[in-house]
Amino acid sequence: MTTTAPDTDPSAAEATDRAREFSVWPATAAEGPDGRVLLAGVPLADIADAHGTPVYVLDEAEVRDRCRTYRAAFPAAEADVHYAAKAFLCRGLVRLLDEEGLGLDVCSAGELELAVTAGFPPERILLHGNAKSPADLDTALRLGVGRIVIDGPAEIARLAAAVGPRGHQKVMLRVTPGVGAGGHAKIRTGTDGQKFGLSLRDGHAQHAAARVLAQPGLELTGLHCHLGSQITEVKPYLTALRRLVGLMARLRDAHGAVLPELDLGGGHGIAHRPGEPVLDPTTLARRLRTALAEDCAAAGLPVPRLVVEPGRAVIGPAGIALYRVLAVKTTPERTFVAVDGGMSDNPRPALYGVRYAPRLAGRRSTAPAVRTTVAGRHCEAGDLLAEDVALPADTRPGDLLAVPVSGAYQLSMASSYNLVGRPPVVAVRDGAARLLVRRETLEDLRARDVGL
Ligand SMILES: *Cc1c(COP(=O)(O)O)cnc(C)c1O
Image 1 (cartoon, helix red, strand yellow):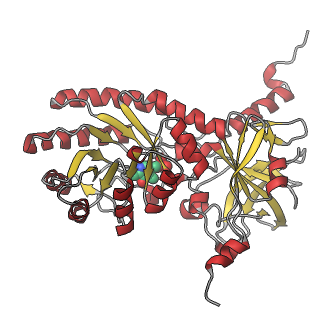
Image 2 (tube, helix red, strand yellow):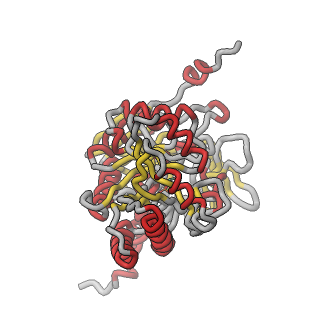
Image 3 (cartoon, helix red, strand yellow):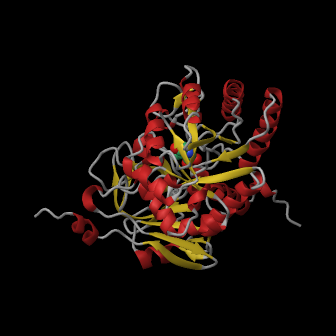
């Protein structure tokens, strides 16, 4: 009989550490005996060999799981779940989202065309934007998007004119409910005095709603708000909900208009590193449903159909960025591990200080962990992917480094800085990998440069 307690058993402790580390990875992630990391049964090292690095890997089962969690929490009988395309979009993902019964939020003619030409039903698409171009609006009307979310007073006349007196377009109104929430000042969008939406407090929202209601070609189906991103508390959503229901009641009183929809936007927070808080969609749904029923009953309004718009929470944790280490530099202050990507494929650390937990993905190391800064390859001192992370002291050029929770707002914000070309996207599922988006080549870049 063994006398070793589980918590002093080094292998048990190691297993606990590993489970904690992998808690932010897709559920299919596993570490082989040789230390190679597998996703959906596919070694990441094989993907790096086949497609080069940097490369982004998308775990299809994780995306579908997340879609299904949302659909179960917000059932189709009473709610719609729209994926925010700006987090990441490609045709393969469009197909998958359609299969899983989600709607789509787009912010440009480009996102819209990509989705519709990939077969996504336009009536399940919603167009956003604080400054929609003529092409955005023309494309939306031509393709027949389900809703256009009006963001400012000037858009009302513009849209009404474009729709024409005999035309018809369903619209929503983006309201800033005066709720401050979000992981960083640059991604807080629910407060007054910023570029999005119509203020509830100063009466602009109500005034705009009255003008929309007076347009015969426009059908106001509901109010919309989006508070910000990376929100981990339910409370800001409840506050926004209460204020929007208040405005719905005023619109009913003043104009007899009973709006059938209420869109609370996205921004549901996820963990980028083990132990960070998340916003659980099931909890959010339950509390929103209760609050909506109460607030509507108090206001004497029928319960509107609820719409939510998660982007990051659907795709973020399903993506892994895979880099090759190119250089290691040790200074008295810290160790730098430089990889073959950086701010051109992931500007988020530089933009708003996101922190990641990278790890070796191609081999096992028994070297002690040292405090390391993972740097990109670009010509900016601020091109750092992860600061003060623990990596093995023997990390060396040629090693593969994986950054989990890389599915959202990385490739969709990627640039051609230093002309390195944007990385490919590979989907994995049931032991097989397939290419969704190929690498951007120098030929691609040269083809647009027509001025010699
Ligand atoms: C960005 C955005 C979303 C999605 O935000 P996430 O943080 O990715 O969930 C939803 N709705 C609107 C209007 C947005 O601008």
